[in-house]
Length: 457
Image 1: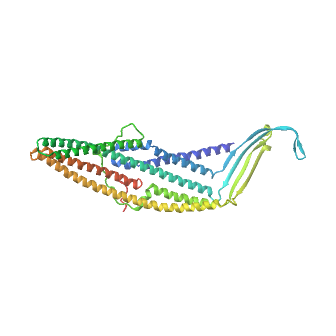
Image 2: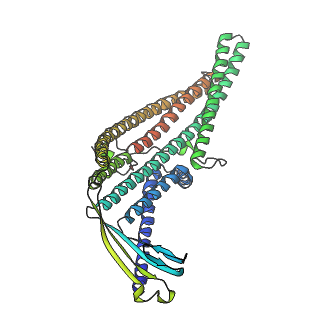
Image 3: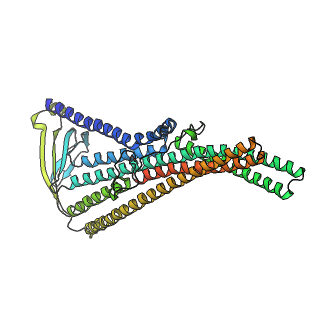
């Protein structure tokens, strides 16, 4: 009895330790997948708070975590096949036999009796060929594939959310500038209308300015629609349909510096899809070995120990104890070619996985290179628009100075201001596009913190 108690305690301890280890590992994985240190580079607390809300509430992330837990249970189920199986199936009954039963020449009169049959049945498949252990390894690789899929979901969702977040900031600023443009154009229309009434300009000039005003108002409506659509999109990520989307002001948005513009092809090894294909090759390699060993014979140890009595008073006596044990060999002599076909199937799948692995490398390199080109172009466009905005701001200031000394009129200032605001819109667009291209490069490299990695040539 003491030995049985010790055995039960050991089994409980063994089951608890992996659970604690698994919880710790899941926490470490979540911290890695969040990659908050990367997003802190933008120095935007509202972005961080929104991302944390996404990580807590988003249903896609919850489902990804559940899939990991499902596969962990599959590993536990498969590992159980490597252990002995112990079963208790008792039989407590009473026989009431009819009179005069006959077995050949022997006759048995009417009788009744109790049956007490209390066996422990044990079976254990001797893993001579390592078949069950290979199956466990295969499922573990499947778990790695699911974990990388979970990581890919984190990277994709956070990147998509951040891109939409900065686009919303851009929409806010563009709408603000557009409203100023509409007011400026309204002033121009008013001034031109006065000139027309005074006979200083033609009706065509006035109609042309009024047409420009309608176009600016139409563009304002488009910016407002874009703003509203982005807000609704972000609410889906946050799973908060009522609250307002907290966001930073455009004036506080910064561009990240020291982002490398050259990478080694080895950078693709950090991508989730690369790691998934890598684990898939390992898994299918195990599956091929499993299919081969399925052709070999299996040996199972089977035994029973327990009590068998027809009287309760004799149930625990030595005469009621029984034990039997044996080995059961098993081999399929004919299965219609099913196992051979299964082996060939796994070999084909293994070759297909190798091809997908090579393709994944090429796709990864292509996406990283495309991300680099897009990032470089965005920086160049932003620099050009900044220079143009600076030049236009000087023209605007000169127009205001000329008005003060009476060299030019108010309408010239309005035209210069309008040109400045249009240049400002280009500068805003290119700045946000640079940030989004940075996020796209982060996503293409598999969630690498681009501010801390070395510039790999």
